[in-house]
Amino acid sequence: MMHVVRWMFGAALGAAAGAPLGLLLGALFGGNFANELEFRGLRGYEATGRLGLLLGAALGAALGAAVTRARRANARP
Image (cartoon, rainbow, N blue to C red; front, side, top):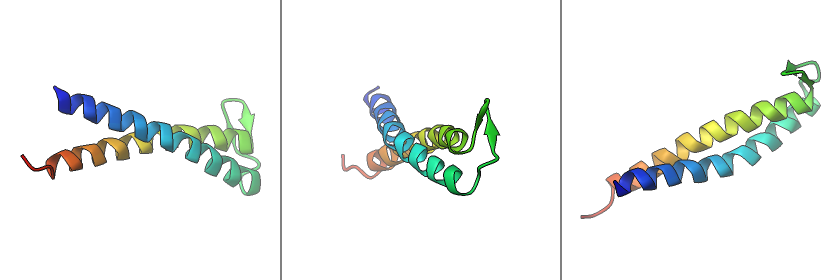
């Protein structure tokens, strides 16, 4: 049971770290290159920032869970 809690904590921590990074990278990309992109009624850097936030949180959660799982697999008994 404790390994599930660690896995969920790793995923939450990864999502919390990945979301702001994705937001910043998405907004920078949208402000410079994707001015005409439209997503949920938003355009340009606002739309790509929101996409970056969603993708950053998802990738951060997956990476955090994978790192937590790998650390558990390599732990000594």
